[in-house]
Image (cartoon, rainbow, N blue to C red; front, side, top):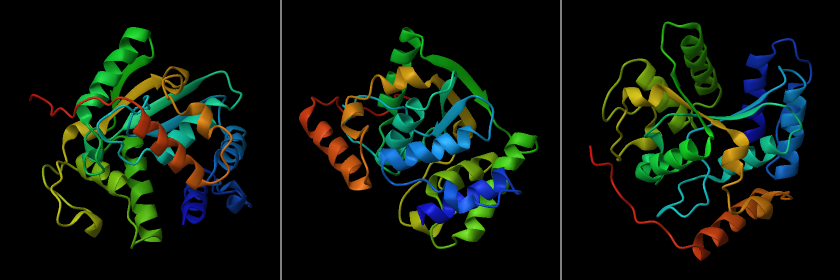
Length: 234
């Protein structure tokens, strides 16, 4: 599925490509790094890793589902290019996956102090960037109707003005969501600053399978002292 979806996404980036399937990223660091290196050759000399959750030492009360985020952050950081950024979109979406957003904001505050935070920008429907994002979500939904992305569709719902417990995919039925305008904010960071804080970085840097990444993060999380779960006092 990952290979097919990645190839589909690449078709939107380059409709003229004859070998999109070759751009599908492997499940380990080595395969993901190769895929990003090929993509790097197609775009400007910068790498933007787009994720919802800020990478951290994983001392939060709950890990969420950070494996693919961590994989892409390490792979992008290992890519030789002069400008590398981490862009996070969808604040609040991953509460569904067990992310503590109090910890997210605490991590962001630490990155502000260390000079790793570059500010926030918003994306809006009716603007070229927002419409392109919505088109991309619709495109992928049509290609994988039984596996619609919870994160992407929640963000799309927020861009369309939905609010509260709104479900764009059957995968979230039975849970309570909080779709809201904050999901349309891009949080921008220096990629290296985030990567340096990942205590399991070296453990996954040579990975060849997704199982290796899952195991390394799980072991690290089990060993570190964890912060308490705190709800946002809002």
